[in-house]
Length: 85
Image (cartoon, rainbow, N blue to C red; front, side, top):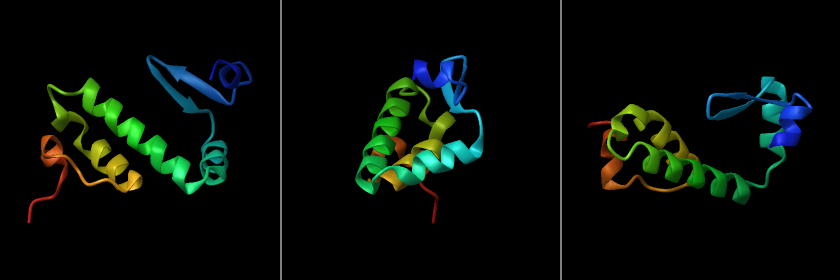
C-alpha cells in the first residue's frame, strides 16, 4: 500500500486508502479473480462489523453491499442492512 501511495496511485485520508482515480480503481478491480474479490469483500465486511459493532446501523448500507459482493447472507446483527418487506 505504501508503494501505491508513494507512486500516487492511492491516497490516504485519515485511516482510509482510496485510489486517486476511478479508472485506476476499475482496472484493478476488474483484474482481480472473482474468488479474490469475494474474499476481499468478506474481509471488508468483517472489518466493518468489528469496527462498528456498537452501531452497525451507521454502516448498514456498506455491510449489505460487501455481503452481497462476497456472496454471503447477512448475519442477524446486520439485520438493519436488510430491507423490510
